[in-house]
Length: 402
Image 1 (cartoon, rainbow, N blue to C red):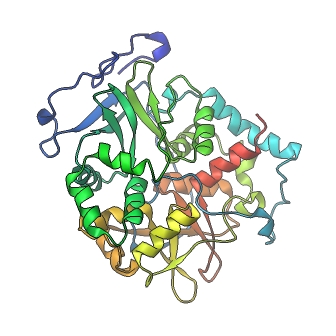
Image 2: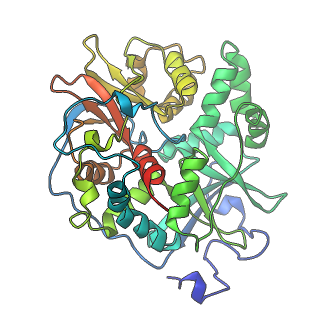
Image 3: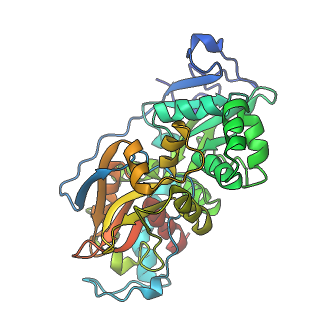
């Protein structure tokens, strides 16, 4: 294990040379399949203790759902108009401008301000880095086989981490070249990630936002919201990649070390706090095509949509990551129905809750189940809204007095 960086200025890591450029072993010694894939293991000072969940909140529905749906790309899930929430609540409404509201959030903000990014890193983990010249096909195949939805990119000509490869990059290309499946096939099979990024750069913003290990976790919360991202690399001054901070990571750390019992804020319901989306909720049906659904992702800035039946009851959730399973099978047109697409991914569970669940129970369930969102339903299982981890952290940042 390694000491905290402020006590060890040289800070060496077993898989990373602490120099201006990264010194790596020959790729063939690492993984036989793609020559340019690097799996980096590191060990840090503290381990996150496992947290417990005393009560199960939520209704579960057996269905086919990706185990990666919690780890998407864009910040925020659905447009939310808090003024439209008119249902009664067990608590009196809390107004964002009130002193009471600021006081309730103060312990949470203080918790993240005191903690450093390095403090939140697990005792052992892995960071997957692709050389930017790897073939796109190889990169996404390895990603799907290892159930990951993102990887950092290393540019050997610059000697530094230059960005992230995510499912959103794949979706941007699929939408841009729709009806030109031969072009997409050539791009995936023949071109490198470097070329892919040159094309993708014209379709979506590409900017590497990162933090240092000594920066506060609250700074990470703010950056994730400001830049509308779900992943934030932790990079040392010497260029060593230590970890990737996500909303799920922040939530797990909060559940492990913040006392919910002494924090009144978590006793209020989602409805009282107006956390989540209750108006203009984007949904789809199992008869819709996958292409239509990924258009919804792009048009509305969402990372997943509930799938409903004719009565409006939730039967599944389709996320950005699920597109990888189709592309891996060679389906670039995405004209198949959602019903058929669901058969190509692992089976899991749809989790739902009501708007009257307390925030504390919702947060613990999201963390324990390692999912990114819950579908909010009424007594008939009709979709009323969605609450995601990014919704919760957005609420913290937007309403806290800092």
